Length: 306
Image (cartoon, rainbow, N blue to C red; front, side, top):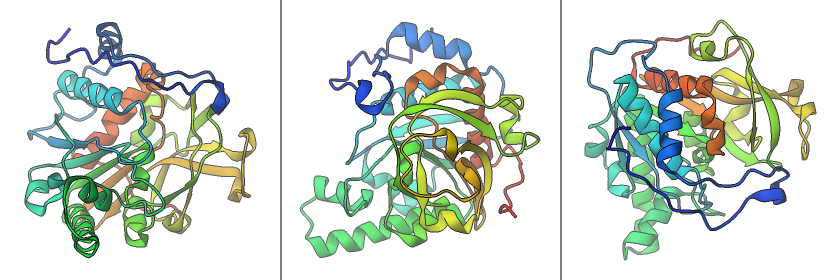
């Protein structure tokens, strides 16, 4: 076991339990869990990188605090160290979104960094928590951070958005166009069969045309999602789900996609609400392939869907 992975055995104090329809409870990060993920993680990247890829994993939430945030950090560290495809830098400070700091990285991973409601503005939340700036100054500076991130991606940077982090700037129409959509709602946690949109696409080869089944929150989206300005990778069938509030076009809910934004690349993956899902080696391979796409190593068709 690599000694860089320190045990983070902090038991989460709340339980998801049956309130969400499935008995999926938080698990501790133990040496045993880390060893299991390390064993299941892919040894070799799909593409051998000739560059030293540097990735920021931003892991600070101000709203709903997903218990998997520290698990995601450890899982991503394992993927990085075992594959040698990239290096992980975990960040929590808003200064990471200064334009000069973003330039240090080939990609940014937003790790369930949910803001609070109703504003749904992570940057404004962080400024309120960590500065004494007046409201008008916060609004201006938060807009600057959003612009910095968008210009970073359009200039050639990569962005991976994990699960709830799609809400980072959820009320911003321009950010919605960058990310491919905004969060609308989710029914209760439930078992779902996630399927490949195109089994020949290089970013879903891990699933071998079988998809996968796991317990997760089925996310539904609005705003730019309905422009379909992305290349969808994974979907779920709406009529197999419980708790829908709205009709769904073509019975299809896309839960992972990639897209171009200027010269940069964006990868969104809704699967990652429960750390138990990481015990599927195919999902770990999918995450690694997505990271290789956003840093620019793995080439794939990211043209918008027809």
